[in-house]
Image (tube, rainbow, N blue to C red; front, side):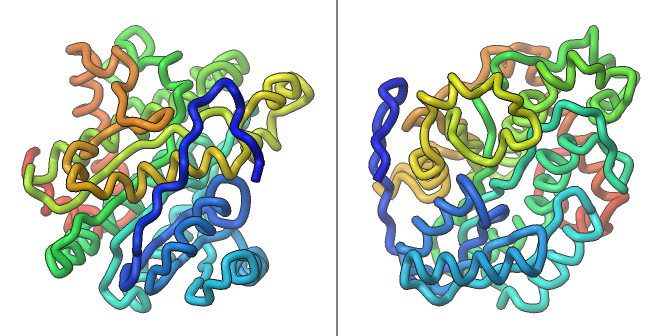
Length: 335
C-alpha cells in the first residue's frame, strides 16, 4: 500500500459491517470511485451497485472489483452524467430493479475541463456533470433512502464529492446578480472566459455541491434519518486531470495523495463515524479526516441567501427535467 504524503494526516479506512445493505457508488471504474467501491465491497454489503459511462466499462469494472476483493454481489449499470436522459434512465432502472432499498450513496463522478463546452441539454459541461446531474440523482433517490432508514432503524447516508478548492471562490452579487440564476450565469459563454474556466469553474461546481448538500439537509425534518455530507479527498493522483494537465501539475502530483488514500476520506464521509455520532455529520463538510467548516463565505449573510437561492433554482431547473423531482420535493418541509 502506498504511503501517505507528509502533507496530509494519515487516516485508516473506517471499517463497518454493511451486511444486508444496498450501496451505490457513482463513477466506480477508475480513481477515487474505484478505490472507494473496493473498500465498500470488503465491508460485505448485500448489494453493491456501481456506475460507469458505458456497458463495456461496466463489465470490466464488475470483474475487476470481484477479482480484487473476492466480493461477488457487485453489479455496474451505465450512467452518463452529461446527459439528463441517461440519469433518468438510471433512476427508471433503479425503480424497477433496486428492490425498494438504498442505504448508502456515494456521488463521486466528476470532471475538470478548461475549455468551454456545452452538453446536449444546454448546460456547461462541468456544471451538469459535477453538479446538476448529481443533484438530480440526489433528489430522486432520497425518498427511497428515507424509507429504507425508517424500515431499518439506521441512518441512510448520501455523500457528494467536493474540494477544498471551493475556498477560492464565491457567488458574489457582482458576478451573480439576483436578476439571473446562478446556473444560468455559469452556463453562459460570456461568463465562461478562458480565465474563469481555468481558474474558477471546477472550484465553483464543487462549491455548488457543498451548498446543495447543506440546503437539502436543512430542508429535511430535523429528525430525518438521513445524513448528507460533502467530502474533500484532497489533491490526489487520479484521472481527474486527464483533460487539463499539460505538465503544469506534474510537480504538485509528486506530493499528492494516491487515489486509494483519497478514497479513505470518501469512506469516512460515507459511513463514518459509527459510534452514535452520525447526527453530528448532517450537512457536514468532511476534509482531512474530520467534519470541518467550509469556506467562511458560506456563513455570511450573502452566503446563506445564495444557498437558499441555489436550492430554489435547482428545484426549478430539475423539475422541468423530470417531473418526479416535484413529487420527491414534497418530503422537504421548508419552502
